[in-house]
Length: 323
Image (cartoon, rainbow, N blue to C red; front, side, top):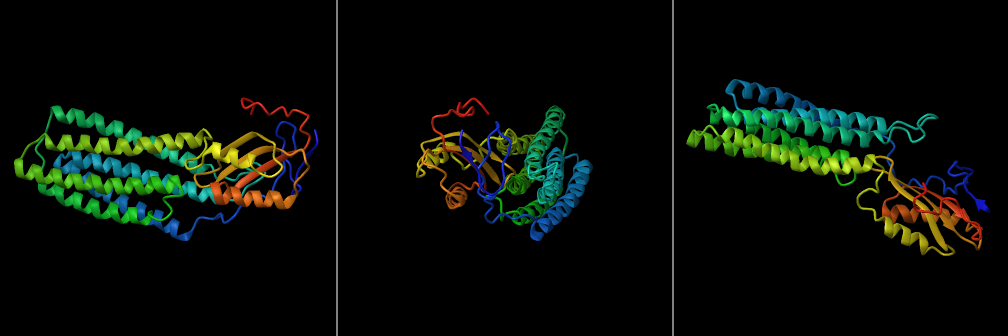
């Protein structure tokens, strides 16, 4: 088989040399922005302090709603710590042992964050069900005051992560957690008002159940997305069929096989593909332009393309089930 590559690089993939366009990184940040680090530090400090206050008042008043919200906030603090650590690791340069660096640590962080929330949901649910059968009287005024502080803290933290949430599942996870926490705190305020007005003991544990439902809905989406990324699934927003059709339409390309699209991190996507071009190698300019189009049109910033000239010789990776 007559094969070529560019850029002086090759990789051992089924004993084929891979044509490379020179990495094709266009505009990626290779370090953690200082503003992002400050956002994590401020968010962790604010929420850790509030967790201590809310848990303390929850224990003093016997409010399951406050304890449930405190447990949720604690899981978010730990989640922020994990996400921050992953962001720092992802910014580290590659090495001989980790040739992609630690970029995928951001995917592990998203998965750990979702798993942590699921554990928190289980713990809160068990205690809430017990409290439904053994309700206690809770001072509504105290619940309202603490929940109002929670609204302020969570809203301020969510605003810190508003920028960048569309492009990074870790940042989106942090933003959604804080925004949902603010909404949950608002619900606790309403519950406090109802308790102060009616004196009904069942309102507190029922509010806790509502908090669990809100956490569960948000966590399920994060868990599904992080699991997909962890299994190297095609990232959301990228249509594999459209990418394949785009490659097939390229001048001189008669077939495309061994196409793979996977996440390098929560923000960067990689692609490898074999292009059959019987008319001959198209040159470095073609590969460079192809890299730019893949990033511009599909958000794929790290593409490795192998050009196969001999169309009469079958590549062992033609079959879709062979990887």
